[in-house]
Image 1 (tube, rainbow, N blue to C red):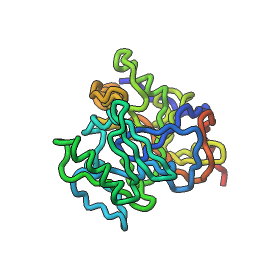
Image 2: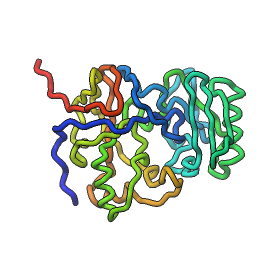
Image 3: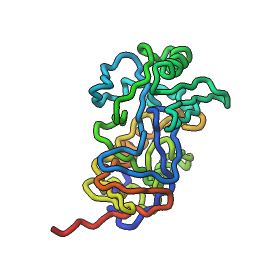
Image 4: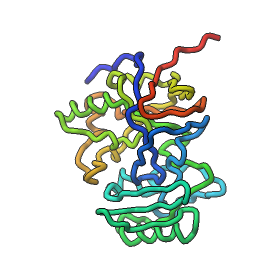
Length: 267
């Protein structure tokens, strides 16, 4: 078993910044983004595709487990799709093999129906009921109930590659919001309870991320070709990789920004 790393002390740097407007669909790269207190990245997991009735009420949105939605953990074919969401028009466009296969305004009944029709026709027998595009005010269809920003330490990804005998691991398997470099591998796992400073923004690290089978799916080929959670379990005794941070002070962040572990404030 690999010993735990010492807590991160040096400054890291943001090298990747992503949002996922529709749960399970394509990551969208960003250069800069404004974080708001108590919120996710803007439009992150704003929509989900219900896989059969879940009981979700858009007027009183409550967290539901990801098993209620189409997701990479079980529906790896989602990775074959190239989707883009336009904030100004609320239009989701889905392409496959370079061709547009569905498009619709997710804030209109007709637009949602166009997207739902595509999944109805193309995602049998994975469907447990009629697929339905869901949203709910400022609700986020995150894997966890609280609104968080997910962070992956790229040196930990490199450590997983070593565990796998040198097999390349695409960082987007982990579907994080922030990808950072500069911390020793696994040191981020010891940051729970500490505060990260990124410019004016402050994020309190609230939880480790327990990895699920979604990480086994190659985001480029859509093939389920690795066993990352079992590999973590064999080498580390747990299946954690990455951390969740809760925005406690807002501010703009972007590629190239420093991520510092803030010293506790004296009272």
